[in-house]
Image (cartoon, rainbow, N blue to C red; front, side, top):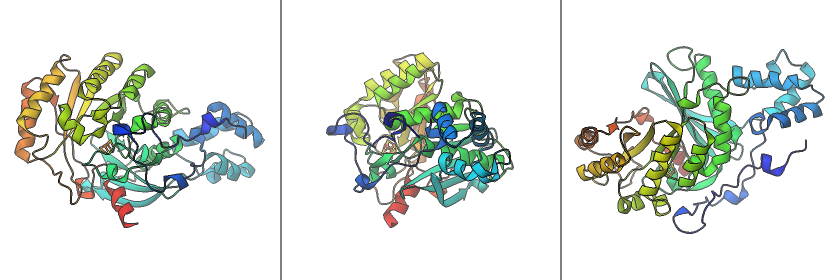
Length: 393
Ligand code: SF4
């Protein structure tokens, strides 16, 4: 198959930006030994798929059949594709649907309605995803990078450093498998539909922009081009990579933006989110508000409440002031009780401080709801399961 390097190259794992200072990537020790994931159906352009099929001696409509199996029925077992020529099934399996993610462990909580899966990738890297079923929706939280280079000191994933970016196929396989689990009734509550996707697992999505955007397009397109999950039900989070937010605003895809702010002033945020030294609170909020204007989607402001650090009345008041500076009703604050890493100095807020934080925001006219802490009893905070397994390895 003839393919160009740029079309298929899985990005290096070095996110764009400086190599020194706050935006320095924290690469894991063994990153240089890792190769690229096998190319998958979802990593190919429509023309490339047709080209591969042609080399197998198959006409164009066969590609559409494969797309139907993949996006419409969440199926990659070509051996079972009875509408496909028996002699071509194995080759189709190998060339279009190599195994990209394999389940290592699965933890279940909330009466079976929260399922957290640890996956192993082709190179032994570990990532995770969490499926959360609610009465009116089912949300999957997915990873976009192996580890994360943003270095937030309170975060388990941050401690791992960045190993590499994930390919579009690796990102989408998390979605396909969860959608299949729902449709087959493998999650407590019977058969249902995966309805929401949040890019809030391991990694900084803006650090892997090209792959996550390709994934967003394939999640939101209708079958047989994609899974048919509305872009309005997709959330892309960022720790505040301003160029990424601005680029996303230009895409014209109405995904929700979630910004992990965690502090209302620069001194504190410099400490909690090292990226702040590169893009500070004001720059991040300017970009987030511009995203709201461009997309007409309310921006989520994520705020992990840490006891005695960023959860006091003064922090809530300053946060309200900074958000109200841009006008009413453009942002929704999600304070999240921190799920602490074992042995770290960062701990969860006292319930009374959480309540006061919420009240101050609400009284100032800023909508805020304490984010659901689904899966806390299975280490639901981002990166924790993978971090533990890696430590043991
Ligand atoms: S909090 Fe988010 S951005 Fe910061 S290190 Fe953890 S995964 Fe990365």
